[in-house]
Length: 447
Picture 1 (tube, helix red, strand yellow):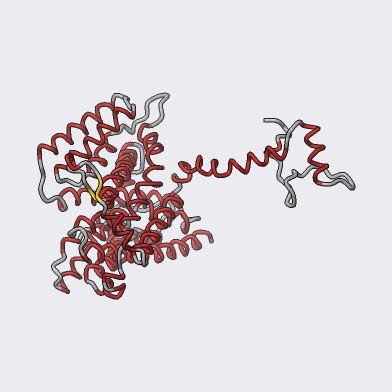
Picture 2 (cartoon, rainbow, N blue to C red; picture 1 turned 90 degrees about the vertical axis):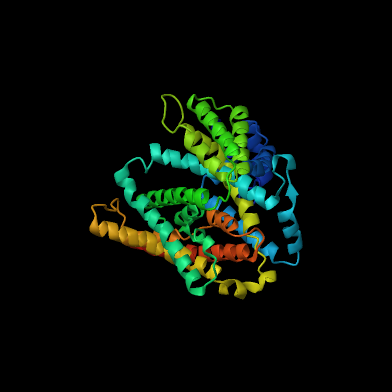
């Protein structure tokens, strides 16, 4: 790089001419000309190229930006808000028609609505990344040491049970018979929760992020198992065997370090399709594929799970999750009796209460009991009030909770709309309460 490269010289506030040493009586144009003659540069051309490169630079930086939990969370929120506004606007018919438009090869059983493609297809990419992160945590991350991981892992179990019990209690008292939605408030959204922690938790111990990440990862694993065992009605075992065979072949190839995309992607698609045809939610196959990718490092080679996450996370955070949120959050409240009708529905009430309160009692209560009566301790600068804030934050249950809502009730029913609205309201309450608690704890730690 040349010492006097104009790209490194700060432009003048009042003109395109860089800050060159002034001579009495000269003009900006004269200063520019003097610099060009001295160093052989065309300043105007350089600056115009820099301006034209602004959008290109932004596009090139998108994969790096999407690694930031805050950016990914904001993108997800933006897609959901836009969908809600559109779905309740005078143009909501266009949104509904687009969401229900069917596309895909009928011969393969894949003539699905666009919304179903987003939930079953695109979201599989998100779950593949979740599987990769799980494998990394189990092999080289926070879940490797059982003593360190035990407390957040057990707290995650409490965080799944607490909201489910509150939801079931509300349905039992009101006699709705909608117990099938018990798992909806049990899911924590990793990306959204980490985004809120990144924004409001500056100054808190780094170990708190590890605690939340471990908690959320185990939470996702538990909810994935719940989907497999409780939201799968009938199983076609022939297709299931095909899916398992494709998953095994994928695992064999990656174990042998054969990672050509034109081999792995078709095998993954076959595993997904066969799992879908088997009657099991197809995202289960994506998690299994992610868990089979090696996480152990070899000399002179990048960790494979890390390399795959870098490759697929921009697609997951930048396309798959926002598109899913766009089609899942577009709830037509106007034609469903209005917001008042939604918040009076026991299904919504159970979710709205279950997400913030159930997660708080389940996670914070479990940690208090375990640290009080066992040898398990928090450590690393984390206190119980910090876990109180994390418990509130874990009530953010957007992506997976909306998926479970669509599995728990008939497609297109009022129950699905009210459950999804309950998820959104419960998530907003948890985000506000959790962000406030984190900010207060950060102020305490800063003293």
